[in-house]
Length: 416
Length: 149
Image 1 (cartoon, rainbow over the protein chains, first blue to last red):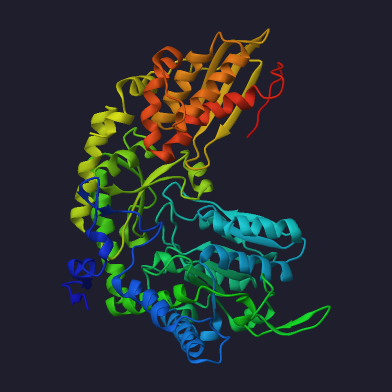
Image 2: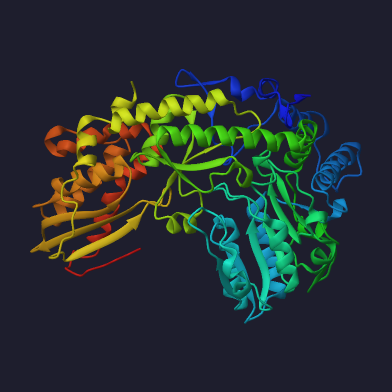
C-alpha cells in the first residue's frame, strides 16, 4: 500500500494514494480539480466504489431476512462491515456498533433513545460552544420533552475550549457531556481523555461527535472509556448515508429505539411489542446495506494506510496551509498549532466575503466551503456570519495548497 | 472569463459604495432576515406614506451579490407606490428564475445581476433583500413596524 517510512514519522505516498481516487483526475472549469472540502465530505477510493457496485452486481438482498444464498451473503457482508468498524474503533464487540446514516442520526438516537429515557427536570446537559448543530439541536429537542437544561463550555479567543470554569459547569446535575472530538469550524482537537475523566467523576455520560476526528485519528473507544461515539462514513472515504454509533453495551441495553418497525422486534402483539437486543433494536426497516458494506471497505483502506500515517499527513499539510495562508494575509480562525488541530482551516481572506471567495476560487478549479459550517455558535462567538474553509485529507498535496494561494490573488484583484 | 458575468463593474461599485445603507429614523416598516445558507443578515427599512415608499434604506452585512442587490433595490423602489415596488420585486424574481428578460429601462442597474442566474446558489443571495422588502410590506402595507427574525 501507499505507505512509506518517513524520517520523523510514517508518511503517506500521496501520489500513490491519489491514483486510487478516480474523481481526482477530473477537471473543473478547464483546470485540474483542487478539492479542499473533505470536511464536508471525502472522496471515495475505487475500492469503495467497487465494493458498492459488487454488492449490487453479485450479492444484493435484504440483510437479516432471506434464507436464500443472496440473503446470507448480504447479511454476512453487512455484519463483516460492523465487525471491521468495531476493530477500527477498538470496540469490545461488534454488537456495540449500531449502523446509522451518520453522525446526525447517531446523536439524535442517543438524545432521544437514551436522553428521553433517562433525563429528568433539573438534570443538565453540558455541551460546548464549538459543537456542530447536529450535537446541539437534538439535545434542544430532548430538553423540550424532559425539562432538562442545556449548558455550554465557552471558547477562548484562540479557538480552544475554555476549561477554566469547568468545575462550575460539570456538576452532579450534569447527566450528559456532549463534545466534539474535532471542531469542523475551527479545526480544534479537544482534550477528550481529560473531559471524559472529569465527566465520569461526576457520573455524567459522554457523547462524542467524532465526525471530523474519526477520518484522521486513531480512536480507541475502550481506552478512552467513552460512552457513546458518533461517526459519519462519508467523511472517512465511505459512501453517503453510511456511519454509526458506538455505545457501551450496558447503555445500549437501556436505550429505547427511535424508530419502530420491521426487523427491530422480537414479537408483536395487538397492543405492544418486544424488541431485539442491541444493535438490531435500533436498526428498523431496510438499512443502508450496500453503503455500510462500502464503509467496511473504506475502513479497510484506512487501516492499510495506517491511521498514524493518516494523522501525520494531516498534520503536515495543515502546518503548510496555515503557514501559506498567514503569509498571504489571511485571518485564521482557530488554533494555529498543528499539534492541537486538524485539517479544517477556517479563514477570511482580506475583506473578500467567503461566498465571493468560494465562487472565484471555483473558477480556477479550487473547491472550498463558505458559510457558517453548521456552527453558528462559533460564528457568533468570533463575530462573523461566515468563514471560508479549506479542508484536507489523505489525497491533499502541497501543490494544491499552492493552487489555493494563487487563486486568492485573483479574488484580491477583483475586490481590490 | 466567466467571472466577468457576475462580478461586473456596476455590481462591485454598489458593493463597495452601497447606496442608502444607513439607519432610517422615520421608517414606518422594517424587517430583518438572514440567509440560512451563509448566515448573512439584511434589514430593510422604509418610510411609507400614502401608499408610497418615500425613503428606503438597508443595513447588514453580506456577500457582494446580496449587498449590491440590496443597494440597487433601494434606488429602484424609492419614490414608487407600494404596488409598483411589489411588481418590480416579482419581476426581479422572474429575472432570477430566467423567466423575465430584463430591460435597462425597467430594471436600471439591476440588469447587471442577470448573470447570477447562471449560479443557482447565488440566486438566494440576490433575492434576499427583495424577500425582506416584501416581508416588510406584507399585509395591507400599513405603517406598522415589524421585525421578523
